[in-house]
Length: 307
Image (cartoon, rainbow, N blue to C red; front, side, top):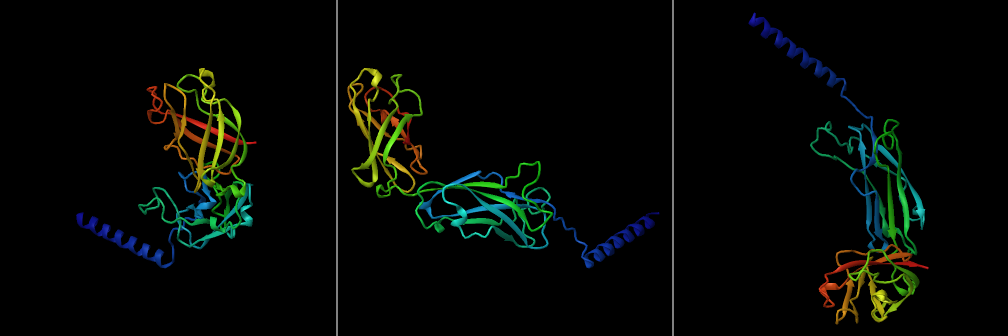
């Protein structure tokens, strides 16, 4: 009986081997080419950069398909939201090609041990913008489909992102370009000061070129702590613009607790204005324990909106 079982097992192995060899010879390999494309999960839905950076923006497209037997063309549109039209700037053709057999499939069944095997990218070269931007350039990159009827853009009923918002900010700060100059509404977006009153009342201020040249600005603010009963003073705020950021100069205020209060920029808050229509100055009151009042740094934000 044991011999019969061994013989039957051996015949079964031989039969399976022959069957597999025949399938391989005839090309009977499983081809699963049904799926969808989307932008990579976990990346920001909006990407912001500055014209000054002159960088290349690369958007990875995840091809959620186990395999593709032929080249796959991925189609997309550049849809203008505001500012300069991206279609008049970028040389992109509206499509990219993913070579046969290369997918960005992610999941437990891809048998690769990697989350992403391959990611084709839609590349946008910011240096192709030759003219200086005078306002933010905002547009969407939208996946529209592929060359395969079995692989659409996005999966119906699922959270599969097919759109990315791009914002490219003007890099101009030079007063010769007229940016960050003129009248602005000043408001404070944070709470009260250490004395329980507003640091500044809402008012209109005028930005002019500062003492340090065309990349510097200054404006006067009236009435620091006007409700505290102290003398009305005028404070001059000075700041400088550079590579998409603003650096705020230290400002002494001759008022409070028998010594000056020091205002300064908040080093923990990066300020990157996108255009001069509205921007914020993140600051610290009683900077570094100044003023002799025993008060530690109080963060506040000055919001300037162009009139």
